[in-house]
Image 1 (cartoon, one colour):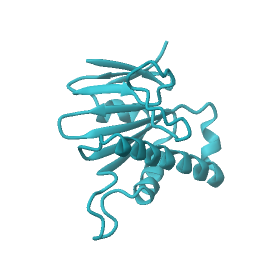
Image 2 (cartoon, rainbow, N blue to C red):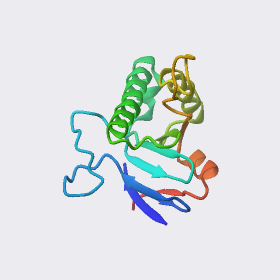
Image 3 (cartoon, one colour):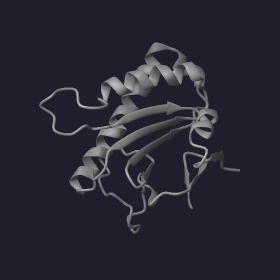
Image 4 (cartoon, rainbow, N blue to C red):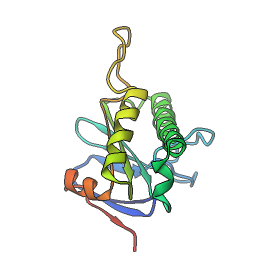
Length: 162
């Protein structure tokens, strides 16, 4: 089991090949990606058949994202964190499996998570948007809160850091 702390939460990843903090700031660690001008997701998890890019956000004032401009800014941040991480991993020649992007928006309501998932899935884009593309950027995009995370990923429980 791999235990990872990110964004104020402790994740327990069971039955994975690897899991590590990708948004690493310590340049002495082997998982430091070195592209400080690019955005990065918090955690990368490798399973037998997939890579999971995981971004964690815990909002002090979730009501600010009930308004259109707040949702727009959040969407942009999440989208570019995925794209920049993809770019880094591509440059490292590490895109060896399909990718699922998971955004843990810790205390947002289910309806907003569902709305954000639809928008992000379109904008990343998920799957191949045109026949000319030989590869998809992401196989899937999942946006959920802590309650939904623990329901859908029971083998990977998450808890607030005490």
